[in-house]
Image 1: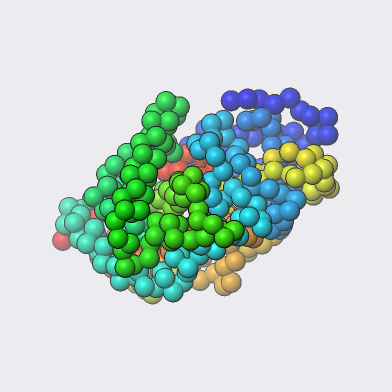
Image 2 (image 1 turned 30 degrees about the vertical axis):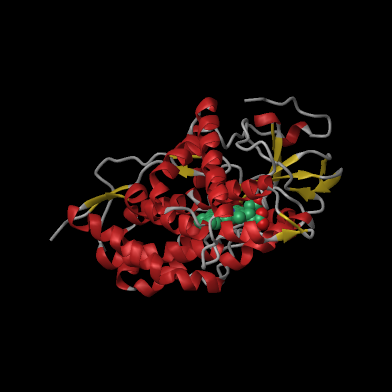
Length: 401
Ligand code: HEM
């Protein structure tokens, strides 16, 4: 890790010892770990080359909306960026950003997601029925991950029999601490995408429009997308769309396993699932996004220099007591739950309708079939911090009649 020396424009009083990648508190509860800094409106940390951290919902929303002053261009608060080029559309700024984003939007619209509802539900029930009589499951590998892999491969237009390989690459790329393993997983994934694209270019296009078909036939600035642009988009979808939903489902079930009264509410009223999903997303906001100042400016009364990086943790925004009553409590009947678990402004998550729908279906179908369950006695769930908080395993056990 590169520890920065405090630059002249950062007042010593605003320097804090904060490191959301390595602080051990993030290994048990990343959301509570963020609360430690709630007392400051803005501060600077020397970790990972130095960056600013915002803590209030209003400030975080404002920075995410102001794409002119705060750029997404290759901004990463991490020692080792995963991809050498800009990922599309997440690391592009307007107006370039919108030209690529609009290509993907129709595939993830509320209508498109409604059309996938019965397929997602069918697969979810099939997976639950496989382990229901066992009296135990591991929520991530037995349900959330295979479900999300299937939905994802379907939307992107990749063969379903590659799900196991995908899991291996995902682990290698996103979870491996070892740089060489990450590089190898990245190279394998790109080789696979290249193969799929080659096959598509020569084979007839499928009747259903999937991501690959859209990217291959679309035009930007009156020209087809280059091969690199197609790959930069597929990589982003892989990074943004596979693990996120799985992780939120894991944190949600950890919470439900430990909170019988919430679990019973869901089991008694499965129709509560969509609201419950939004509330669980709010309190388990896994994404901490970052931006770079495009010029010298002032933010929350503090001088910011061009090139300074700013961390906008959606967990801090979504647990801000200025924005939400009883912000750290989980209330399935919370009125007007305007959380920003999916970000805010022009880069707001493209997959939000899909992810919310999937989480609601998982909650509904699981509790219909398995209303009472818990973590094995003495089991301690391990989690991690970073740009996307992570959770290792959520084993669940229940009585079989
Ligand atoms: C619970 C699950 C998810 C969460 C919490 C989440 C969160 C986010 C957040 C916070 C952003 C904004 C990043 C920024 O402002 O820099 C984002 C962007 C994005 N997400 Fe998601 N996401 C989820 C699921 C998905 C899924 C399932 C997909 C697609 C299959 C997806 C695709 C994308 C894409 C393409 C972007 C970039 C949008 C842009 O830059 O215009 N996400 N996501």
